[in-house]
Image (cartoon, rainbow, N blue to C red):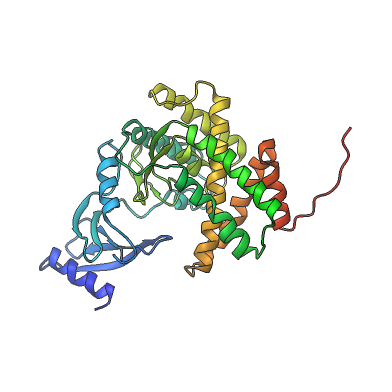
Length: 341
């Protein structure tokens, strides 16, 4: 029996005598698929997650849903589960992602203030999650994991996507940048980290209550990580002045909430940018891997924006000049000679 038939059989057992239909709800970068369950009697729709157990484990999703839900944020409720088959029945947080709302207005134009309101809601939910943080509840975002993510850059973006082999000097320079980043990332205050807190995983629900999805990979790690995922999103770009303004608004709200952010915004913003660089380097590798290993080429279209974020941070901090030179070499960017007076 194929998975769609098995899923239909399982749902029939959950809803004996009730007519229902299945329609694709969304997909993500993993092997998971999501279906919207609609009922002929007009009852509220539900979502069913199909996570093949040979590739995915539903238990982290269930654990984090309970953990985040206890903080008061809007996450799906797990209504039924079959871990052996990899099926979860969930409440439906609606069809509209932040990305859809911010790029497709009913009138075909950007609604004034809509982005500010949505991001204000996202900051509030993020702060509630961070306030509920307790060590020992989630895997640590430790040096080994951060470094393993960084290694995706040379393995998948540089070697596979760009077909470039680094020489010893280039590899040493890259390792030095990695160590600089890791020292900063590991020194940041630790909280719950969603790890993909961005416009594709936030749903437009009631004001002040964004729906939060795709949190099964959550960890305990640097406090700036989720904020940079949101504000330097791989799928939607904002003007740098607006990002700075939103970053200040989050920082002010986090301080009022008693979270352990830096007392000075300049220090906080440096941590935000350096954490972002770690994430951008990882994402470059992931997007390349999704194409070559998993047959999902659409993610290659998002590489230019991630590279833009990466280069901007490298240009701003001298510690990352070696990385900028390496990217220039890998991407065959001509560096024009100039004069210094």
